[in-house]
Length: 97
Image (cartoon, rainbow, N blue to C red; front, side, top):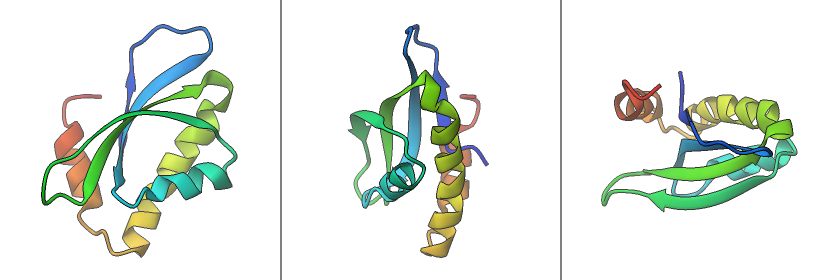
């Protein structure tokens, strides 16, 4: 399952992403655990929706750890009973990869 999109933006030092998280920012703990520093940008959400779309940038040297943390995010969502997370990501990101 893919819960992010890598944006096509040119930079010498950063890669830019959009990813799906909850309003409780569950990914933050995973970024800390994986020792990756993320520069957060704008956030978007809809009323009555548990999830938010977050724009961010990550140093190119930290990209592998960042993607590993996002991979762990799906398991964390399921452990916290956010069972619709995979389907939400598939629906939202369909055709955007």
